[in-house]
Every structure is written in C-alpha cells, then in structure tokens.
Image (cartoon, rainbow, N blue to C red; front, side, top):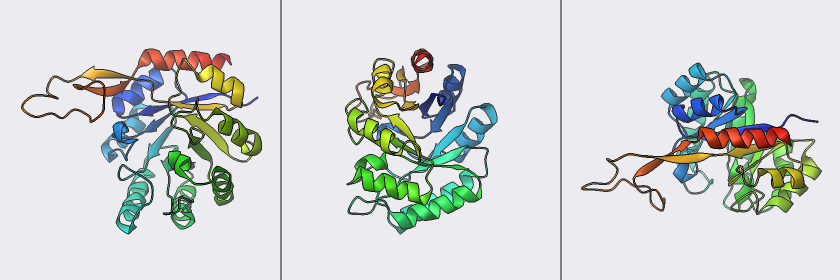
Length: 249
C-alpha cells in the first residue's frame, strides 16, 4: 500500500514552518491564496528551503483569473521557474491551457523540459479543473511526463467531485499521481479516502490573524473575505488533526 501524503497549501514562510511542525509531508508554497495562489517571492523560496526539511512544491502562476497565458505572461513563468530551480525545492506546480480549454502542449512541454533537466517534480495544478475534457487532459499530461495532478474532480470542492476523482484514480492512478484538493479538511477527508482510494491530499488548513491597520481611512480588506481585517495563515491544530485522520486510514 502506498504511503498517504498530506500536502499543505502555504502562503508564507510562517505557513511552511507551521505545516512542518504539525506533521505535514509536503507543502505547496504560494503567494496570494485569496487569488487562488500566485508565484511567491524568491526571498520566500530561499528562506523556506533553508528552514524547512520537508519537500516544497513552488507555485508558478503570474496572475489571477484563468490559465491561458500570453507571451509576456509565459515568459514570466519561464523566468520565474529558472530562478526557482536554483533552490532546493522538490518541484513546481503550474498549469497552461489554450483558449478552447485544452492542455497547452507547447507551453507545458517547455516547462517540463526545464524541470526535468533540474530533476524537479512536475505538478499540473487545478488548471486541470478548468479543462474541457478531464480524460483527454489527463492522457495528454501522462504522455508529456507530468508527475502529479492537483484536482478537485472538476468541481469547486473535492467532496463534490468525488465520483470523477474516484474514476481518475481507478483508470490512471498507476500512471500519474493524483492529489485531491479544494475544501479538503478534517471533516471530509475520511470520506474522500474511503470513496476514491486516493493517497495524496492537499489542504489550506487555514485560520485568520487580525491586522488592525487593514481598515482605516482606506480599506485593504480582501474582497469577498468574511474576515475583513484579517489575513489567512495555516492552523497548526487543523493540520495536526488532518494528518492524524489521513495516516489512520
């Protein structure tokens, strides 16, 4: 039986350290999780790799919204990845789609070439969940040599995409790693494990910290966030509980 893995989605150096202390197996390092996760700073990558001993996957995503990138945005992704791989990271998460919501083979191949050259893991993130055909897409990614896909089963939350997650695992789980994510937490992970047979789980395990300078003469609150004067951080307690449940299954 394959080892079950808990990956925590982190927004900062602090999040990475909390996740490791709470027993996470791996982290995905981002910036701006309220936008779905963007490329973190080089300084954050440097410090995280110096202070953390578990594997770090780094996000390469230059902007919010979707995943169809123009030449300037793609050049930025390539430049960022070439800097990332200079550090002791485990791999990079990215996702490139065409305007008709298929895998952008050209751009994906270019990124894979860099990552394989530097012996880094290739992770296609939840851009997969915006693809038109999950079966065509996963077969293309397998053919290209992607190591892992982060997916919610093409639903907003993994618990809602549980049937597709199960089908993808059964059909392709021996050819590519499937990492279930989005809304995965201590309340539902047992059900997802039992139903899908997936071994890897991705969670933000977040809580909030208040910053009293957020709202004053002007507001810097996240649009749509329920915690107006706060920012998200990883919860040690939530990670610990999630890890305990996953490891017991």
